[in-house]
Length: 185
Image 1 (cartoon, rainbow, N blue to C red):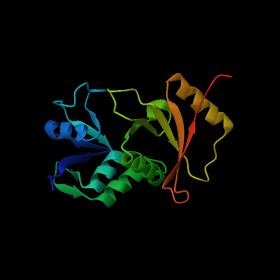
Image 2: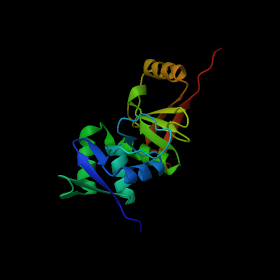
Image 3: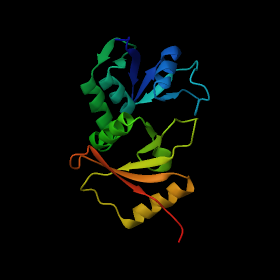
């Protein structure tokens, strides 16, 4: 088994200080963001890689990263990492199920905050294409108004994306996806 990549938990982020390891992790699926580089044109960089906690939980579960804090002195287990993520993300468990499902489907998933949704989803990766999908996670008993759907749809159309609502935990499927397609009459 390959060596786990060393990652440090600092506040609400995870940092890969070794830029070579950070570049390797980025190449594995566009994980994280190189510090100060919005969308790298090449996957090699000489700056630390910043991961969000959602990615961190996923990569820790996969055994790809080893998380510590206090400059590497204290090991951080998956339980503590999940607790930290639950403090940061509203409905973390539901969002994580969707994140995991999208990643396991071979898609690239990044935070969607700038689009007013939970995730921006790519087929090929940031810097290679614009994210074709914006995904909002809703539970089966969430309320969503027609106005919210129209607002999200208009935004998605404006930024040339498909708007998707993901509902975790329904039936035999891990996640159900509702994709909205907008057209002019």
